[in-house]
Structure formats: structure tokens, C-alpha cells
Amino acid sequence: MRKRLHILLLPALLLYAALCIAQNKEFYLRDFHFGRLPSARAEALGKAYAAIDGDLSCVQFNPAGIARIQRLEFNTAQAPPGYYALTKAYYSFYAGGWRISRYLQVGLSQFMYNSGNEQVLGQVTTPYQQRNTLTISSEPLRNLLVGVNVNYLVFQPGNGDKVSRPVYIDAGLIKKIPLPAIRSSISIGSSITNISKGSLTTTSAIASIKRDIPVIWRSGISYQWQYGRAFLLDTVPIVKLLGQVEWQKLLNSAYRRAIRWGAEAQLYNLLALRCGYYHETIYNFGFPDANNNKLVSFTYGLGLQLPLHLLTGLPVNINIDYARLPQISYSRVFTDWPKFTSYSVRLNYAVAKKRRR
Image (tube, rainbow, N blue to C red):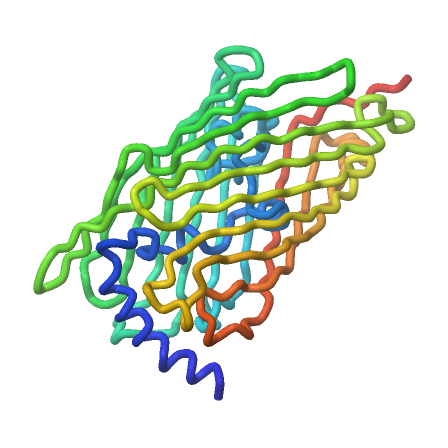
């Protein structure tokens, strides 16, 4: 009964929010740009990832991060159905990348938010947003990573309006500072999503309306430290620790800014334990008693690496990441949303060969 009430009230809430879009660009496509992430690891690390590299899911946060992927990488992330009142809505991410050389890495990815078969506001087909991305990165100078995303967004409003297909560009860089004397390193990363200030147009039988795509600035710093050497494999540390902090701001709106923290402990490069925290400031539409003006939560998750290159001799690594977290509500009225699950699987080809002492 309560879920049915949520569905009935959702159109009224969306209608009111639509009146505020002109001043609050953060709201439009909010579920796509600020909902689930294409990485269970990022979800567990307080949603901070701007200073992380070596993972194809970096395309969401900082395209420079794919400059350190291994020879070939395939990545998928899934968030099973359930997004607040939309019980059939889901997220999916698929990516493939190739490290051609130190100076050129290429990735192709697709990230989708689909509202499922639930129809609201008289929709005639299932609404969805799908971003298809070409990522090109490089390491032009040692420990300086740069990257660019070219995004082709497909926006299906589901209400009979024409499908919009804008193109926009992201850019980012990461500076890595090795500290070999203390087996540590520092990474400083910064990126801007939609640096080209792209927009989409919703076209109906009545009018065409231009909507700005969010311009999101992220900047972060991470510190990594490792200790010891594993038995029979001196390239693998016994313990590896990661700590990071990140700032985020929406540049083309007065609303939506955040600070995030994350930490990770890896044991023998096999098991990873993660935790994080984020504090986001959002718009309450002038109704502080009904809507929150901030989203605050602790996060947590774990990861498992299967070193097939050690067990079978095949040059392959498989990483599995998992997080199950609360859905922090935008509303003060509806707060008892179920937890959501996110998981990622990453396959790397061309792992460094085993070296015996």
C-alpha cells in the first residue's frame, strides 16, 4: 500500500520540480548524473574517484584514469532493479579498453539508466538515458595522465516527445607523485564533465525546450602506501592502504556540491575492505519541512581479486567488487527506502609475469 502511495504522489512531486528546473539545473536528469555509479568500488569509497586510475569505470569520474589500464580490460557494473519508488528501474555499465602504448589508450563504454516498465505522467514508452562514450587518454610525460571523453547521449523521455541525442565532451588529468623511499605515492586528479557545455532539446508537438546538461567539476587527492612482499611473488605487497578526499561542484547551477572521503585496505592483492563518507548539499525547492537540503551517508563494500595468472599461468586477472548501501532520501516525507546493491566485474589481460626470489 505504501509503495502504491509513493507512485501516486511521484507525478505531483515531479510536476512541481519541473517548475523549478529553470533555476535548478541539477534536477534535470538527476537520476542519470547523480544516481547510481558504474562502479561498486566507487560506491563503497564514498563515491570519490577523481584521483583513481587503472580502471575503465574512471570514464565516469576522470577520463585520465584509463591511462594506466593494462593491455586489455573489460568491465561491467550492474545495479539491480529498485530506485526509490521505481521498483523496476535499473542501471548498467559495459566497457572495453585497450592500452596501445604509454602514449595512447582507448576505451568504449555504455552507461544506462532505465526506469523499467513503470509508467508515470502518461508516458507511452519506457524512459531511459544512455551515454555512449569514446575515451582517449595518454601519459605524455612520466606520471602525468590526461584524458578526454566524447559522449553521445540518447535521451528517451517516454512521453511521446522526440528522442534527443546531444554530444558533449569531458576532460581530466591526474598527476602522480611517487615516493619510493617510503613505498608510497600521491595522486592529484581533476576533471570537468561536460566541459563543452552541451545541452539537449526536448521537442513535443507544442514546443521545443533547451535543457542544459550538468557541468560537474571534481577534484581529489589520494595517498597510497604499501608494506612487505608476498611469498614467491616479490611484486605483490602484503598490505596496501589507500586514503582519499574529493570535492565536487556543479558549475552551471547554484546547487549541488559535495565533499567525499574514502579508504581501502588490500591484503595480498586478494581481498579489499572499503569504507567512505559523503556530504552533499542539494536544493530543497523552498520546502525545508518536506525536502532535504543535504545527503549524508557512510559507505562500505569489499572486493575480491582472482589471480588466475598465478593459479593457471594465464595472463588474466579478475576483480569482483560489491557494495550494498542505503538509499538516502531526497524527501523528508518518504525515508524508508530499501537498500540497493551494486556489483562490478573487471577482467584484465596481460598481467606482469611472476617473479621468484
